[in-house]
Length: 510
Image (tube, rainbow, N blue to C red; front, side, top):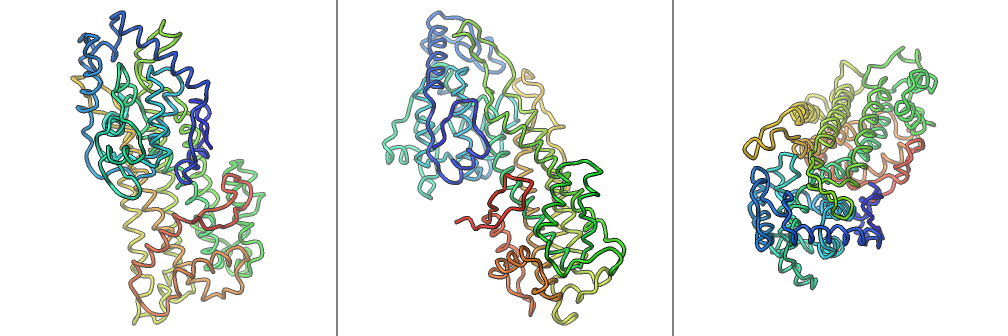
């Protein structure tokens, strides 16, 4: 069970709720804080104070007073008019995370919603009812207005959801779970959509998968080192300690542990004095990517516990402030940074693929082909990897450097953070496919060297991978192999992943 307080949610808890369907409850103290802030909103409406979003219109209409008799219609109109997202829906995991994060933010007690709003959000999570939320249409400031409006529709029994594996009308899923739709009261619509939960949820899911892929990239590159008879001296702890980057030190340590008893690695001067950078500099490059991922994790952990709507209610309503916590710039920067991290993991992987298949760079059969010339082997797999990393370079262009004014120039600077988070996830998918190709090629290379000479840990991974990808004894449709390995890597997890100072063991996620 995960207890939401508004302040203590961790990425590990999000993972348990989103992936493992762990039950969610709100803490007693957080619900009391919600009740207090709601009483403040009710007083504002009764006293006819002019407070943005409660008794006024929105955006450029902030100066238009709304009579208390119209506040419910105001909230309904807000959600209907703002639910204009387009394109493919967010992955279901992201939609689930979005509900969780919005609930946690409202539980801080600064948003002025009723406890009924919290309760229905928690019901959605626990019942596995996930709103269908189009990915495109958010500027990443004023909150993720369009995506979160599609989430809010479901609370009112409108829109579509994915429930029990099927896309259906929200009202049908709610009825099946005996959940009553609600009518949004003063400020509640605004509180639901003024926030960064779309970009943050996409970022969290992307980060969790990126962390897994970063660990996998070290194991895959270790097998490549064996296939190319790489020089193990470059991973000596002394080299990395004198530079001083912890992440670099940790990567080198894990690779040494993976290759501890390998008979395929070499020492400097045994075959050659130095390896190419794509082998020798794995700790430096992968370690730098880990530095970025650690930065991203830090920002996400702050944002998942942040109050990001507007206005915010303090001191039981004595202070109501219109600010800009909905602006997604911190997450926009983090997502653009994560794009670089993942793109570089793919870039260096593609270069290792080239060294595995290019007969001018190794002593293996050309393109790892069983019959060079008659059979092309892995030749075009390298082409595919090259195309993927090239596409990543386009996607890695920072979304956060762009801004287009909106709402008649009232909202004249926006973050584009949701675009950044979506592009980061696309780069992640491409990077995973590149690493899948590297793994397929590395498996073939170590076969030529002698599987019996592999390290114990890499051999264990080899045996698992070979259950999916048979040896290249004849050309075949390698696209199927690439996709099979890609799916496997996404579903394969490492026990002890959070501990960066020890080598994770391998387990399959069912």
